Amino acid sequence: MEAIFEILFELAIKVPGYLILRCIRPNPNPDGCLIVLLGLMFWLLVGLTIWGLVVMVNLL
Image 1 (cartoon, rainbow, N blue to C red):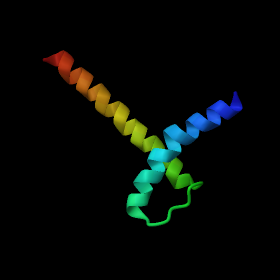
Image 2 (cartoon, rainbow, N blue to C red):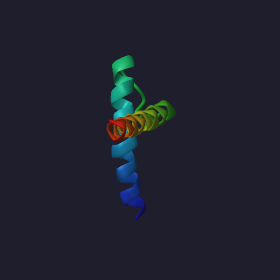
Image 3 (tube, rainbow, N blue to C red):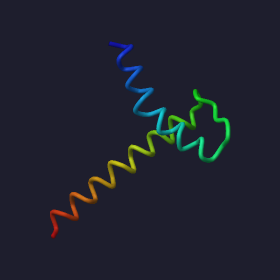
Image 4 (spheres, helix red, strand yellow):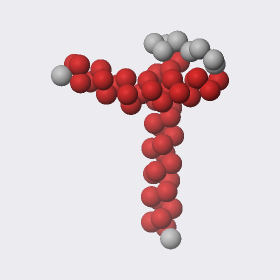
């Protein structure tokens, strides 16, 4: 169970964070805290965007 969580965490959080940070820095540390924060911020932005679109569609 722990291995599944670790794989999902790596794919869902760290990969988007790494890709975003790689656009800013040429060689980011793949185990850095900044990558996790950027990954979480990415998913927060995705969630807020989807929520905003749902609210906008319901108001039309």
